[in-house]
Image (tube, rainbow, N blue to C red; front, top):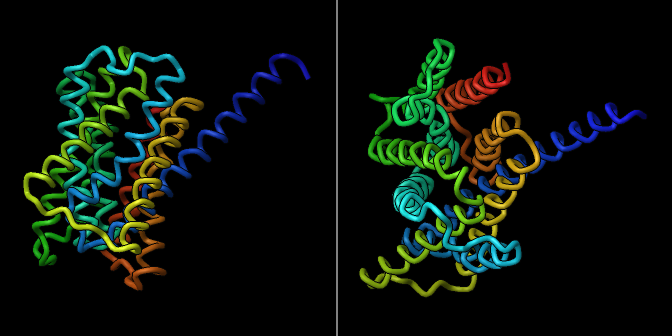
Length: 292
């Protein structure tokens, strides 16, 4: 085998590994969301705290091992992004607690489409007619999931949409940060700012609940699943082109639907299934557009 063939084989292998890592990340995030439903009696901020504890314990050790400056370079933007993601995470966890799992995950997955338009506003990136068409298609999918005028629990939907908007803004901030700071530093800020804020709110509100053994195990698993998702997501982006692997993050919706059907015995309605399918298809079309 000549050098060219060897290089192509190596690149192909990395692509497959990247896709596998992204599928594992999507599964971890879906498991995390599923587990939240089993601790609905635990305060929201307490769940968020436990979700971030593994990040706070593990990521700094990885940063120190690699010799990366732990405080980062663009500290003001790192802090601002983390503050925005506090509200985004709280919004998402709230919708997971009160809405069908498939619907909550699907609404969150609108963030990549919204980020295209925020990139045009803040980064002055051009939007093609194809991008607009794909966004419209994804928006129609969102309407099928939301079912305005039919759904009675519309308030959580607005909370979820607000979280998706903040997540999209967070994606744009990462675009700014990627040239200045290592991904592990970004994740570390994410974990510590959100975790310490959640702890502060719990102490201020004095509503920390000492969980029973079952709830404690679930809370620990939420943190491990969240850390696993974050780690495999970062690893996937490192070993394969983002435009290739990002598509597979939409498999969260499929995993969420499977959990709804087999664990919660509540199959998504036809509107939600069609809406989720539209959004997944929009993600695929967006991937094809980037690959051109």
